[in-house]
Image (cartoon, rainbow, N blue to C red; front, top):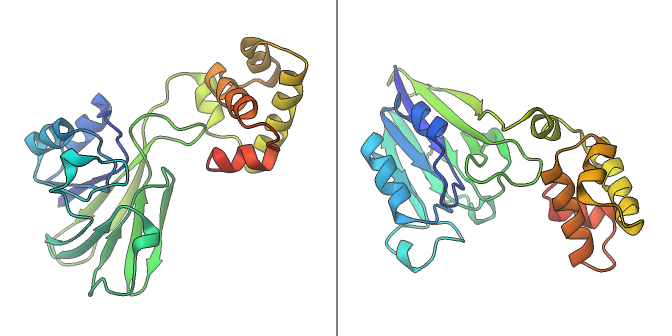
Amino acid sequence: MYRIGVISDTHGLLRPEVKEILRGCEAILHGGDIDRADILEELGEIAPTYAVRGNNDGAWAEWIPETLAVSLFGISVFMVHNKKMLSSDIGNADLVICGHSHRYEEGDFGGGFFLNPGSCGPRRFALPLTMALVETHGDGSFQVRRIQIGLLDSKTQRDGQIGAGDMRRIVRKVMRDVDRGAAVEKIAARNHISSRLAEQICRLYLTHPGVDEEGILKKMGL
């Protein structure tokens, strides 16, 4: 059994639990927004690493390609950071890797399989921290396992389990609480959410005059 670790959008943070999972892999794929060269150096010490350049990777990353085609253990892989940059010109890729959205996604793409492992770097709003493992016996077939990285506390974990409808109601209530002058900690307790999520909603509301709940949800990537 060969294992390929698939990560993206680390944004300068390589968590110990992510490195521990990757130590069981024969290769690592990074979907971009790496942020620092030493992240790739750390990954390279674990296993051969293949990466594409993300929109937040600056001048230091000019040598990293925007797209990459590579064959690993009988699997033809095509990589690009942003799914919007995908075209039909991806050859006969079995596996297409993207990042950028911080949201886990998988499904069919053309004649291959599309995978966005989400982000396992800094936490973004209520989105879970995720990565993926691709497992193969080297015969061209493979299985994909979604892995959610452990969250920091029970309230933060509940944040990641809030459905779209409930999140809309929470945003609406937080906006009303802000208008009443309530403190962040009180808003968090009243709505049974983490202080971090409450602070994020408050900040978006206060720094974008005239924004409505749909606008806040969009800025949160929800």
